[in-house]
Length: 335
Image 1 (cartoon, rainbow, N blue to C red):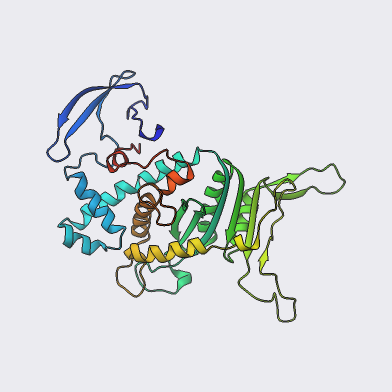
Image 2: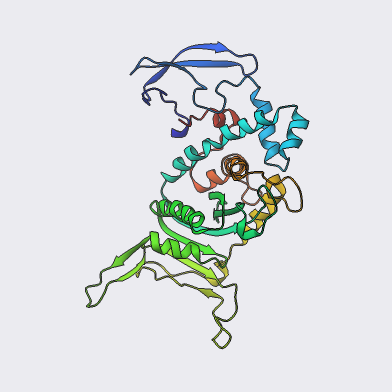
C-alpha cells in the first residue's frame, strides 16, 4: 500500500533500506533506516505521530478513542492522568494526518459518487448568536460508503462554503459521475457552478451556454413554500443550475435528501463533546474545534467500521484495500 511506504525525510527518496534496530521502553523494537541516495539515517517514527513520544501507543490510542466517543478534554485529563497540553499535542499530531490521508484519497479514480452537503452549528468560546459563531461546520458525505470528504469549521460565510466546494471540485476531477444533494442551502450549487463549469459549443448561432461539467449533477430540496406572497409555489425539488447535455439525468426525487448527514450530525453531537448542546464542553477556540474535528475525521474514515455498512468508509469507497491497524496508522509519515 503506497500510503505505508517510507521515504527519506531529507531528500524524499524511497530508496531506503533497514540498517539496524533499537529497543524502546514501552513500544518494543524500532527500525533505523538508511537512505541509499543521500546516506541519511532516520528512525521509522520520524515525521509520524509517535516521533519523540515515550508513552505507550495503547495509552495514546485509548485517549484519542475516548475523545472521539464523547469524553471532554478535562474529563480525559482526570481519567487518564495526563496533562491537558499533552492530550492536545497528541490530537494535533494525529490531526496532521488529515492532509496526507485526504491527498491519498484524492488520487483514486471513482466511477460514480453521490455526495450530500449540509452544515451544523455549535458554540465556540462563548454563547453568541448563530450568525456570529465560528462553530459552523460544513460536511460533504459520500452516501454509499459514508466517507467524509470535508469536515471544516468557521463562520457561516462564503469562504467556508467555497473551501468545501473547491475540495469537491478536486473529487470531480477523479469521478466519472458525481451527484451533489443539499438540504436547502443553495450556496453549494452556486459556488459549484462558479468553480466547476464550462462553455458548451454546439455550433449554433448565439452565445454558448455555460453548464456544469459533464457527469456533474446538483439538486436542491426547497425549504420554503412560495417565492413571494402572490407567486406560484416552488417545486419541492429543483435543478437551479444548468447541466451538461451529456450528463445522465436519471435522478429520482426519493434520492434528493441529506438524511445520512442528518444522522451523522446526531452521532457527532453524541461522540464529540465540543458539539454537544446545553453544556460547557464547547470548544474555547476555532482552532480547538478544528483540531478535534480532524481527529474525528480520521477515526471516522480510516479506523471505525460504520454501523450501517459494517465496513471502514475508506475501504468501502475503495481508497484502502484493507483496514489499517493502529500501529500502521500512527507510523504514516506526514512530512
